[in-house]
Length: 311
Image (cartoon, rainbow, N blue to C red):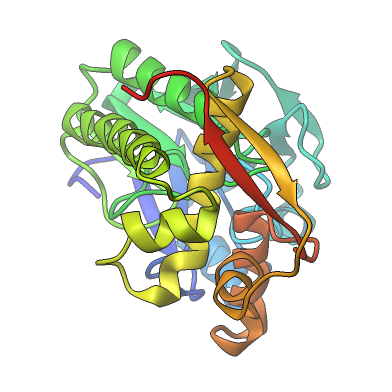
């Protein structure tokens, strides 16, 4: 963090391809009180590190705020509440235990510290972003992270909502000087980062439409064409991004989909229904399944057709 900042980071020891080096938990210092943002996984060592960091700074944890309910961000909230007595704050649609719901425009405040609450759907329905005006800093959870891009996967992820969230942050917080995501290092040029995220999603959609125009009509076929320079191990993640774009395009009447009455080929199954336990430990696999929306078995495949001319 920046020298003199009221923000400290406590890194959870849950590294994985989905979480980078681990989940960033943030401790924000007020006047003798603190807010914890994203307590992360319910790891005893991580929770103890949060408590000890606050204790060493002579701070009482007075509030616990969670950006969204994915298993690398929210499970630590309940046990941290038990340790500290601090209430848990979350989005009104959050399904994990919490004491109070936060909505757009509200303020979360403790002595000497105030955060503005922003509803930020797209990556997850229950996603919040917190604006710390005093230090021109945005806490973005998994809307924007320090390195790479983030997963937007149906059914919990919504591509058009996500793009609208990016545009809103770029428009309303262009003057902010720091962005602190749920994973990765701080971003010291938030406007440039948001511009890059917005352009990346636009590029991917153009590539999907061009692939459709060239005859790639299933998601695995599109992934093989668009992501051919990306390691094949990441193609299941890419497939969920393609699905999110196609779902948006179908909702706008720009593509149509029909179910193919056949079994998945081995290539298609590896992309659409991978065995995550073969490539990740149980904790990381659980995070991946939640992030990718792979909570149910996938045994079918759709064929997509463009409607009208492809731009």
